[in-house]
Length: 248
Image 1 (cartoon, rainbow, N blue to C red):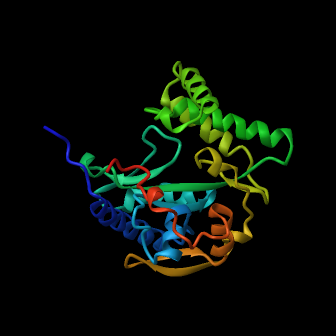
Image 2 (cartoon, rainbow, N blue to C red):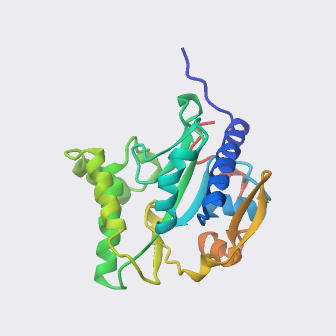
């Protein structure tokens, strides 16, 4: 029997339910978060989902995520769970496998080492671990150099369990406990490399997102310009308006 796939409108409906649940628990416990990446762009440019987006992206500091990780499993809607699955990014998703295509990713801000060799080595270790943890890679999306790197790190990871690799990833990510230079330590590849500062996210404002009151950085223009460039309000060509995770 062929597995039923969720349509994009069904994924959006499921994501709104997740976002309501997450925002309510964060508000109840004073846990700070904000919309990030494509979800932040959608909130500003489309006043809701980017029409072709198929997930929700949230940002938290490490301290706030640790609070969230403790309370969410106790208080969340029983349909949902917080899981790492086979990736380095924590996700909220439906326990029903038929609805697993809809998920909320949590990006975590961690301090990075000082500029120079220590910072480059820190990023390299995380990138290697990402390659070791990736499964079902679509190599057609990459050039020859990245194909070789992905395959090489994949082979490096084969002798190790997913649990060990995830534990190593978190150990390295949380190596520094303080500092002004931050990054989304669990962002994929290039996304991880953006350097952020606390003041870019300290002040937040509330905006409606698909009927849910959500927090975004008051300096959203600065954040979105760093992520997408100064013309972020201009949608991409139609050929690029495709879902990232959904095989439509």
